[in-house]
Image 1 (cartoon, one colour):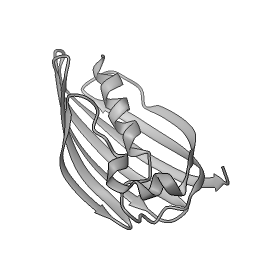
Image 2: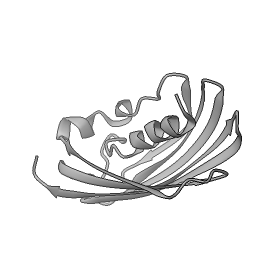
Image 3: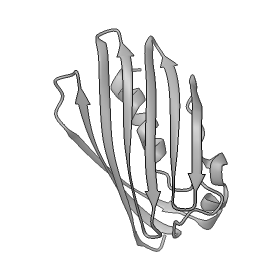
Image 4: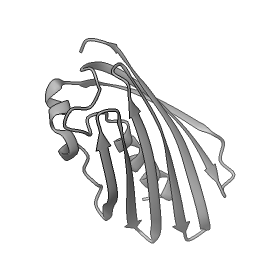
Length: 139
């Protein structure tokens, strides 16, 4: 798996809003936008949007909803009603990555940032992602 694909997979896990036992998240149809930029690689800024239905059952899963991908370990997690901060470390196909994320939950909106520092066969690389999400209606 390419370093970018690994980073996107991990970042995508951040866009799922059900992380705490009772987060300030309203169930419904959500739309997320991730803006990603890389340091250390000549890649243009990338924007990705997606939609998903978040149910009350998803929200009740709390911390269990966030599962680390294979070969990754969550090294720190601070879950709160108004957001979460966490750190994760991964080693996949010769790429080591340390990621730190900070998400804020505000009922019908979420936003956050993520930074991943990677040691790749091509040299060190950093990825920064800004994440925004908003409830757009019922499922």
